[in-house]
Image (cartoon, rainbow, N blue to C red; front, side, top):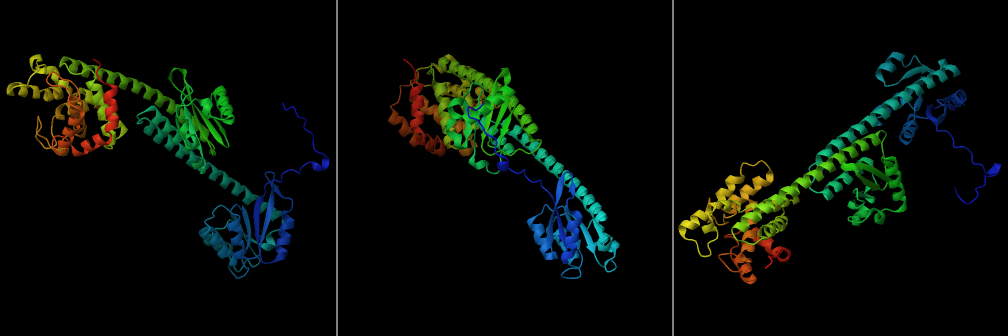
Length: 514
């Protein structure tokens, strides 16, 4: 309760009540007396507690101007003969055809009924009633106008229902479209960003471009944000939302449902394990009738998609860890460096992004590249760990590791293993066609294998192996430059030098410990 006293206004200060919105009725006649008589007959008439609002026009041309200014006119009392013998009829045609107004009810009135037969008027013109002025007593005029107002009201009700159904249908399509898009999202942040975009299209007005939004995970951290809140990612909710939004969020949390206001919208998303996420649209809001239900359906779908995404991420992490461990096991058997496969994975990811591959494809390569040498599991120790140069027989045997790796993984159904199979088979092919096992050249070689080939050689040359010492870094870089267009894809070499500082940081970060 406010600490300040509030005084009631004096009698002469009390504001007058707001006038009721009337039913617009247009009187069209070139005789001022007809306007006066009609106004007198309809004075004080109400329908559904709304008064009749009379509008006057004295010609067909003036009537059309009124219809353009006031397309909400419900009934027209229209004279036939005005500035011309058929001015009223031409006005009817213009209203229906040129203005495309089929809602307004038109009562055609004439002082010369014999000149324009009723049957002809009803058949040839889209009017709703045809009356002789002499027949329109005060009572009959009242009945005619009220009957047409009732019809107009029913038409407007049907039209509103049609618009609501169209909005609901559009909303359902957005939910379907949003769900299919969200289930394809590859990260929590991208997922949340997509959710905000879809929600904004459902609840915001045409001024949405000036607004902002943010998504908060069950722990209270902002995981995605747009517009005026774009810099909020990673921050706590309390550091992002102002008092107005915090009150709305608290209210939504207490009532466990979405809350809408003129300048903001707060949606509640229930996730697995009882967690609650919050979506906030900060800006002008326009919710069509029935749209609240669609938003709630959308939020339920978001909760399901979020849980599935977390589960998928957990499975991906587990699978990636298994791949790393298997890769490390193989490298350990061949006495190669412990972090070789991890460095390889990160090098490949950076190169893939530089080459324009999608984040999804780059992550797939990062997960699959550690299995490039899985076929070495089938190579005898005396060849795999021989400190000196291999003879021709031993080298031929060593080359079989690519087909062994291919055969081990090619029949697996997961995309990461299919990619690993391709990399295992092709990562020793050369751009100039002089590699093995199939002598493939150029873009015949899968881009994943071309990237892995350079990442593998770079790490091998900068690491100690049983058969070689570490090369000086300038010699490694010179070798890669010399092999551009021979061993390596020129585009991959260019990407390597474009991102060399980042790649070198990865190498140092995952350097082998003595």
